Length: 337
Image 1: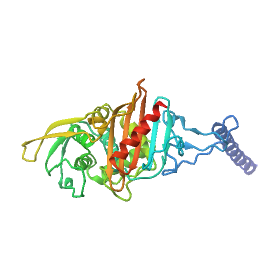
Image 2: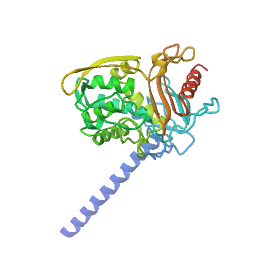
Image 3: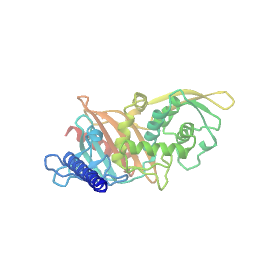
Image 4: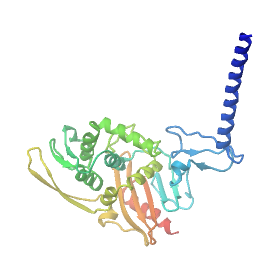
């Protein structure tokens, strides 16, 4: 008798587990499908589309509300038939207020970013350190790549992170990027780990960073759409907003022996320092350039129209500086059309 009672009790426990599992499956299925529409979630790191797009098994599409409800989300070209931009390999124009992609060409192409990389460097630096952090240049600031933009740091030179970020973003100095990376990450490799972690956390999952300055390396790349995500994240910091608007910057830093060194620099963005004008009704607030032989000429801008509405415009891999600004003006002019 005791044996039979134990057997039925055991069967009852198994039946309870089976019923519980079925109820859990029904609840989860109902919450995912909602109103009879079936959704699948193909997202993985380095998926063909960033920002956690959710593929729908019907004709519609949606996104995870918790992540992408405030983002422009794209999966391919948009309005490329309306605007021909010549030599630029990729370009995008995002309306931040309406969360609308007005134009994009090759948004998910993995490309060399050149010094657009420094936006991610600044983003990570601002997240993990205070502006008054004192940085010291190591031997690694000696960069001998031909044509590399340098401030001229010497081993032992010191400046605050605030000063370094100004030089990084306004003058695009590659040696300063190394000093920032080592000062915050311990090593360049350690800092790049933080860069890649941050990229994943903001949805820029088709990008990978192996250095903090954008000098050409095979495993160092971004997509234009990921650059939008990175730039948008950096714009949340008031210090970043302040710096990218500055046409010039002057400061004093210190050599290893304690003597003062004066520094005066100009922005590399021609719209900012007055070397190029925008279309009517468009104002450039700030931006960042990037140029290498592999990346071509690149530019990302934060702009406003005559009503004050904000936009992010991106152009990558133009064949020359002249082509870069001419094609960027075409892209900006599209805002008013």
